[in-house]
Length: 322
Ligand SMILES: Nc1ncnc2c1ncn2[C@@H]1O[C@H](COP(=O)(O)OP(=O)(O)OP(=O)(O)O)[C@@H](O)[C@H]1O
Ligand SMILES: [Mg+2]
Image (cartoon, rainbow, N blue to C red; front, side):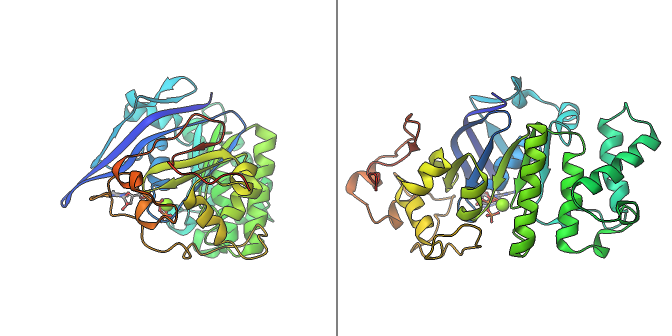
């Protein structure tokens, strides 16, 4: 097992009280596997990833029964140990390249910095050459010239490619792609996803692919994990989730895809009535119960948990096949 998480809880201490952002989160990822994480805005996708990068703010309180990467206990890591793993074994592509890239340095220099930190075996000259190689690998034309560019001189798609080049520079075992294509138009989005897939196959890299877009995960992920209000509510192979969703929320997400169901479209998730709960005052029982069309009394009096079937769902009244 590459990544093994059991009962992770994450609370933020805020001026307005404690916000229990992630509740009893468990999941795992094997080498080379792609896990798609979907769910509405605020359901905890990004903070889960930040926890895996050791980048949570000081106001966050993280506990877990297990948080292991390659058998190493990440909970016990100090900042120096995080620096050793972050950017090398676990790398991340952020949603917005313009904020993640530093405007003051050339993009080539920024990739070189990562190499300087983690690839001490390379000489300065070798590092420079490797930067050109990486830029070439992610499909940037004239990489020697482009390496001298600043982020603002590049298009959105090119900046995203630079971020990917930086993220794969040290052959990570796990790449976290947090909405890697949200800021891009659809044709560029497909190119970037194909590029990630190629790199993944070549390096047997595992990937967490976060997106609002069920079409994108359906095409690109082996498994899909649906999150709601900081909890996993359904998790199974992509085909099972898409073809026979068991949680009413997942069904709602799928129903909001364009009529033809074709993958690859950016889809608004607005067709589920109601709002995600305020995490400072959660509803009792199932977090989705105020919005659920299958609601029954037990849904608000008891809290469901994920079952242990291969198609996991956390629901007292799941949808049946077909
Ligand atoms: N530093 C913080 N302090 C307090 N609360 C936070 C902090 N960071 C995130 N949160 C809260 O944690 C919850 C999950 O946030 P997160 O950014 O992970 O959502 P997300 O699923 O990535 O959403 P999106 O799809 O919009 O990116 C939200 O309710 C958010 O308000
Ligand atoms: Mg996010």
